[in-house]
Length: 158
Image (cartoon, rainbow, N blue to C red; front, side, top):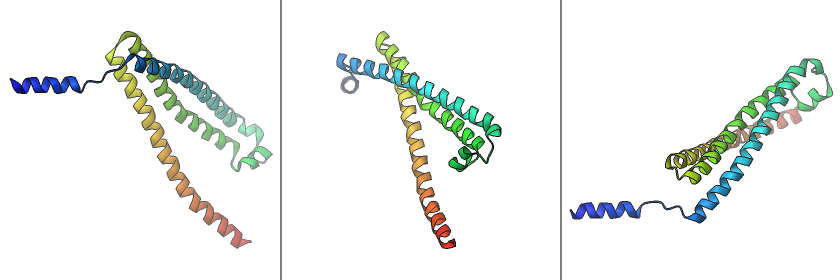
């Protein structure tokens, strides 16, 4: 009997309480998150359209144009890279949008399932951005020695 009382007390002590001030801050975060997610969708859509346009119009521009030589790569490849970057940018915006809509719904209706889902989406967004950051840092660490080697070999050839 004493064990049951102790377990009940421990469970009630470990409960998370969201105060009215916390709810206000979460609602504000949800509204700003919604705005940023919509801006992310718009930016992603524009990047995607630009990438598709670059790819479609690359035969018209030609590889000898000043644009192609300035980029250091064919214009069509630049468009494909743009499309791939747009696809990658879509996912954090999507997770942020899900977080925003579900946190506002959870706070308006006191829905635990919406709160759980919103926090899950926030975690997914941060996980995605974290993994992409690790990948980019790794690429930088690989590219720096390669660039130094390329510069050294080019200067030796002169």
